[in-house]
Length: 400
Image (cartoon, rainbow, N blue to C red; front, side, top):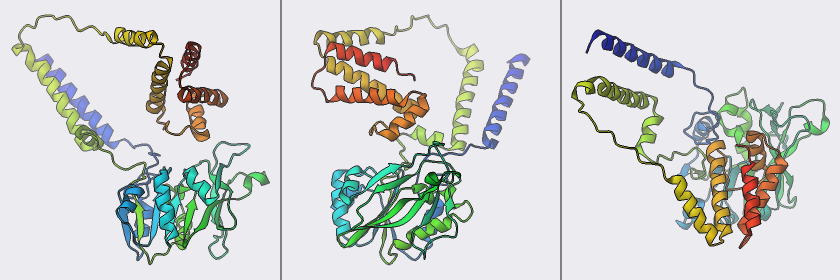
């Protein structure tokens, strides 16, 4: 190796070391992923709350299975089933099992922005978003209804977000426990409180439902004396009985699908991994010049994917199976939304359309019309060529 190559190699190694140092010392931005995992120290993790809960004299049992599996395993003990996540997507079977379990004198604590509609209907509840006339997001504050638990001043969220409230309750079996309100000033309607924490009697037990799971997260609890509010919400739980902590419905639970994912999730292993790759490339670059034999030029394999797609499409068109083509287009469209905007397309509701509208800067009404047409296509047994062409135009006009 001559002096010129040695100088280039030393300079390249120096640049690599500098990049590694900068990557290790750069301040990481705040991660606002809604995790709600009890060992997660991210802003929307629940490490602080769980440690506070663990300090109490109570038995906490972790439930890794779905509620349906847990109840099928003869989960007969008394206690409080504690659900804490952004969305609790309970199935109908799980709801039925949970209702029966609560009916036998147990408690279900659900802190979530997304409570399943069948459960709300059964309990006689309805949920609405609080919409401000002047701002999309605001910093809500929280307090209690009962005087013995009321705080001198409502506890305000440092991060702005939309809050939900119970717009309809069954007053014969429901008790209002807490409320939320916006901190905007100058408008009495906007500052009026809305019930977001309730207790619903069901048989010999009851449900505790809180629509702001953010108040149990790290960022809320470490801000001033906000933890006092979070702690007082637990006054309605019987700590003489076990707490069944749900680990199944957690957005941030670990899902390691391959060894490379684990390797790249650790900053030190990731640095070593990249360093090995770069060193191997340098060895091939400088060491291979003397050892490499002449390699004959071979024409690269041509990409036939376009022709293949045209052939398959032609087969569907020959069969006049317009519905199958439409479903392929819809599936591809939803895949792009999930991958590009990190939005779940499992449930298309007003919240989903609103988030998609904000991220794509498209009109909410146009998006609502598009997804209504997609629903029409999915529910139709057959569609005409004209309807297929109309769907293609609507999907093509979507601005990614």
